[in-house]
Image 1 (cartoon, helix red, strand yellow):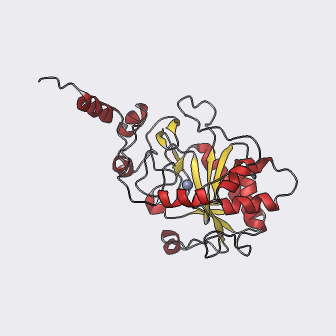
Image 2: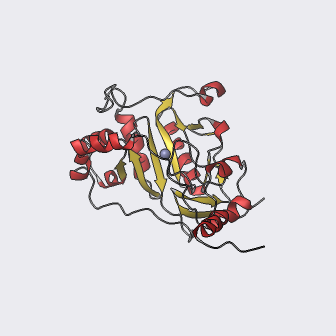
Image 3: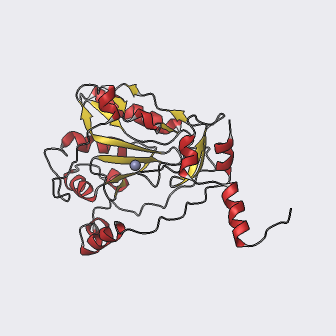
Length: 279
Ligand SMILES: [Zn+2]
């Protein structure tokens, strides 16, 4: 057979070596065998040997179990279990755990750019006073911490327990950052007392007003894990936060929701091809 050269052939070879099509990663229903292996970045990576978060444990329940997005690194699972125990011990109800990652990580077809390498977990601010039924878990009702204007915090919802929950997560040593709505970060900045170092880990981001997104650092011994950009020094309560309430942020928000061509799939690290192909 004649060898086809040129940019198209090169692209085809790259895609064959490291597929990034979300559908491929979504059809796999089990983790790959072997030791845990965090590969690449949270928004461009995968995980081998992932563990499943049990559907319920002390102080927590998972949501939408049929989506099969409760997989991750054991450290992510231990973090959820620790927060669940904290919630149960304090009488704060059952934590509701939304997406972690797919059985082998990789791009998720909807809802997230990250959650690809087993280090991310979404936790709802709402807790359940009584364990949710299977039907409720399949179609759970989110509670937004903002007023209907979508800009200001509803203090009746984002109260002391919600703040304590975020603080509890942000002070865990393995946690790298927490993505949270800018208005909620602002409320945390205003209400925090004593040590403020944990506020630095709260990173303002679009949405994230019914849940917060916790990302842990690259775990020890995971040489293929690529850390994200460093967080700037300081508690982040000053000028960087102020930007989110500026006219520029309004412009950026409009820009974000403009219809556009979908971005081409990202090329995953080559090692992800092995993870996907494993039995
Ligand atoms: Zn998330």
